[in-house]
Image 1 (cartoon, rainbow, N blue to C red):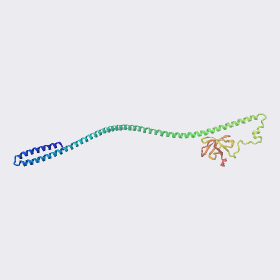
Image 2 (image 1 turned 90 degrees about the vertical axis):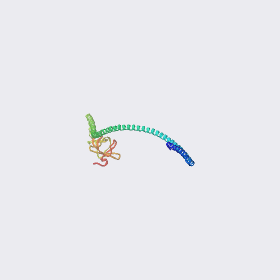
Image 3 (image 1 turned 180 degrees about the horizontal axis):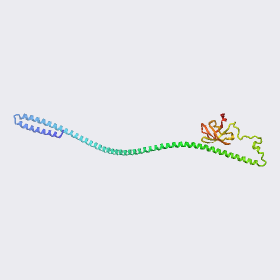
Image 4 (image 1 turned 90 degrees about the horizontal axis):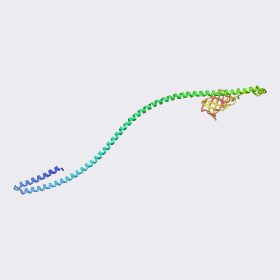
Length: 295
């Protein structure tokens, strides 16, 4: 109940009392003033009782209103405290939002920087790919040239081996000629005429061949290997002639065939025409007659 209502009730009670007193005074002047006075007195008592009840109710309502107001005040204080906390939290969130925006700006700058670096890297990668393709093309050309040069080196090596063997043969022939000259010079001396028979075959009149017959198998070993060329330890003194084919073996394993292209008295050289493995120094060789494959 509001204060205005309470004031209105109090004024109403006061007016009722004043009206009652006026009524009593008016009725006292009439013939039945005593009965009327009693009636008005009862009404006044009833009004007073009602007024007291109204006042008590008003007081109780006022107490309830005060309690409600206090509760609302407490609620308002709690809401104000919550509001302060919310404001503080909002301030913290605004600070964090500002920091997040700053981080976003920094990240955007980093992204732009990385994008620029990526473009530069892509350009460099494209350039490197072009260079790699050029290098691969150049490498292919160099490999082709290397193969050509290797073939030329093999040819030159083969020619060098042949020339070296030819030089050795010429040296050996020169040595033989020198020895023959020395023997002829000794024959010109007195008392050496009998040696002519020895030079002619030991006095029997038969000239013995310088090389053995080739009917028996010829065996030897590889003494040098240079690419497709190989040198073996047998020569013309053992019956080897150009064009012969020797079988290269390693124990009982077949290695390949060697075609003789150059012959010296104590060694010869040839070209590996067929092979299942790479010949090595020390591998055995034998002519085809050794294996029962004579042509």
